[in-house]
Length: 249
Image (cartoon, rainbow, N blue to C red; front, side, top):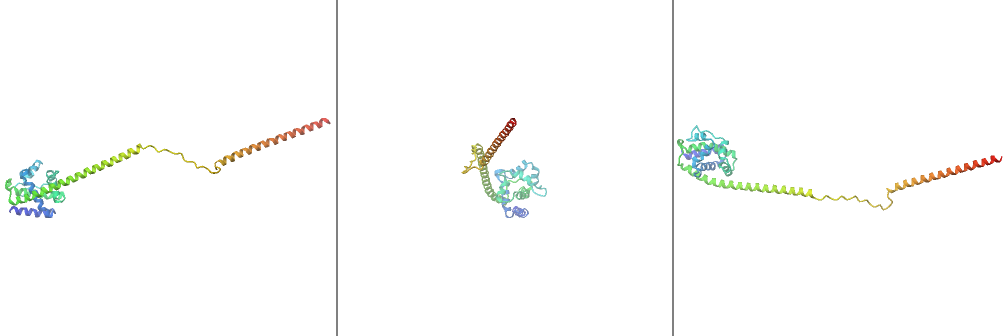
């Protein structure tokens, strides 16, 4: 089976199995560009990333293709390609698909593509023409995706910094309000205003009545005492008259 046919089959299978639709073609192209880029050491350099992560036996099973190729998990792909600015975040930014969905598709594509690029289990310096054309298209897409990712990260960083400045302003304003409230001079307390009475005060009337009652009782006591004194004087006069009459007889 020719290489072009292999790629066409892979693209159709990825589109149907993982629900990526028309994004399957750019996904395969960008993955091939990353796998074969001479800036990172070509296919050998790409596979070294997996070997460094302790996945050497897994990579070895992919060489030459066939039924012995072992699957790779999402966690293993994340550990190699999921770092900040790595291939997985770049593909996610370019394709606009969920990251898990792209990771699953890559897990399916890697063993097949590595097997196709290593006939007889050997790394080849020369790539088939169809692989080269797709890889070149993928390089252009990766450059655009990397620029989009950087723009998004800068925008996100700007928003984070702006949010930090707003939080600082709010905290400072709260501290200033709290400090002003605690240093404000206490308000003076004014005595309640007593209304001025225009006529005799109702409060003074009971006092006057009380005083009048006391004066009346004193006058009555004095009158009673005087009456008692007059009665005593009259009794004394009567006694004296009786005594005088008795002496005359």
